[in-house]
Image 1 (cartoon, rainbow, N blue to C red):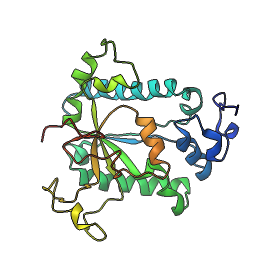
Image 2: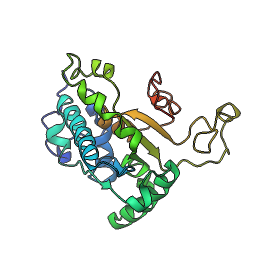
Image 3: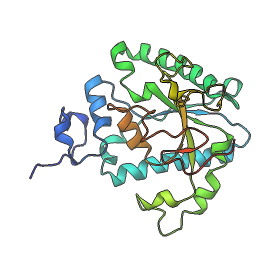
Image 4: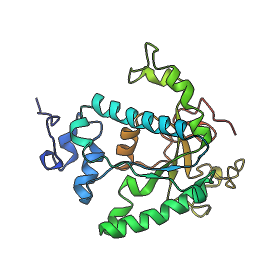
Length: 248
């Protein structure tokens, strides 16, 4: 039987090829750090609502707990938490109730500075999920926290599969490289009801349950992109299943 590598405590102890990660659901996350030499991971979080600091702090604490619990369940907490770097952007003047386009522009500026400071080669920048996608928490997202936390004591609350039966705690994920251009977009993928001015099927952002965020980051660190049908449901549907909806 092939030996697993769950006892690894640094990236240097891990294989450099996918074949060495057959039982590791977060393999692309580790491989991306090894291949690019950029040993940090985690989505950048932008705050879009400033009216209730207590609610904001509770939401952020719950988000971090969700990620920690996922890493523990995946047997990767000891390895990956040392490289996890939470960047929280709070800028009331620029981001209070900002549109997704405004957040994307703000994130673009952040990425340009960070990648220059890190000396990253341009070829690597778009390969690193941290610099391609960001999280945005607006008031609608904050308003989903209460029901989620009230379900904490339910029998299925901690089950990795059944937890999706809990009321959704929702977060926005934004694709930095998305544009409004229709060039190269099949006709069947435009002409939809406008969302923040775009009638494209893929509007460059989605609502996601704030669960399995490390797994999502890992998949986006591989060959997957957020517009893939297995991840994307057009807002106001909540991805990936799309059977629940956020208020418009």
